[in-house]
Image 1 (cartoon, helix red, strand yellow):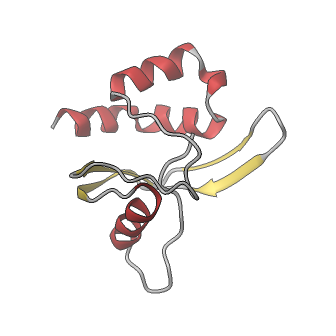
Image 2: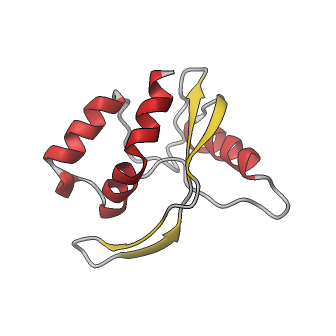
Image 3: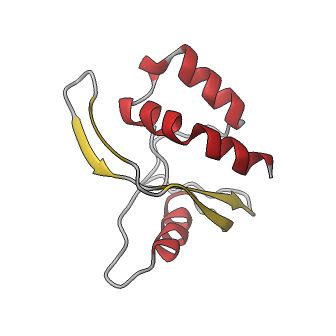
Length: 117
């Protein structure tokens, strides 16, 4: 339950890193990059014992093209409406990574406002 993850390269601005990773992972051209939870960080363990301890700023953007998924990066994907995602997270949080649940709950209000624009 991760999408467009990576690290900025040396001397690369955050916005440029976001554009680069969107293109590389899912072939997305994006506009309107907006910080949603730029200071987000977490430490969580999933049921198998994998521990994530991350600084993980959350941004939103608008996709302007049809996705071209990079099979070397993405095992499976599903495009869903934001409200449907929130309902699924509320109903079955165990079906998602613990960090996605925490991230979505932290960013829910701002993500909803962004989507409504």
